[in-house]
Amino acid sequence: LFPGAFNCCTKISEEIPKGILQRVERFEIQKADGLCHLEAVILYIEDKKFCVSPQIKRVKKWMKKMKHKIHRRKPHVRKQRRTRITKKKGQKQ
Image 1: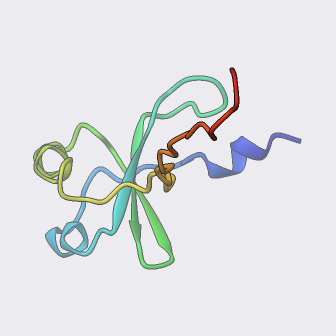
Image 2 (image 1 turned 180 degrees about the vertical axis):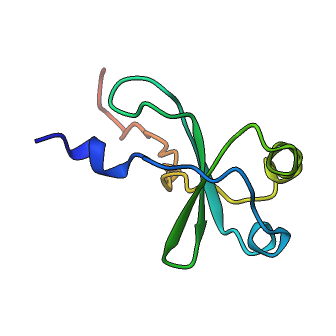
């Protein structure tokens, strides 16, 4: 019925081991609005996801440090080449 509801964190952890933070590939921030009723930080490690509280000092500090280091996927935009329009002899515009 609600496809977004299954991606929400329903439980969050109040503690996180340091070793887990070192292996995180990417993270997302879940806001408490709409279908998701909890604020959470979703950490992705390999094929697993961990939901932790954004209020944990270690997580706050880690997110601030990693904000620029973790590659976020952006759609690849191909630059178009500029083509020069040349007039042929005898043609009028």
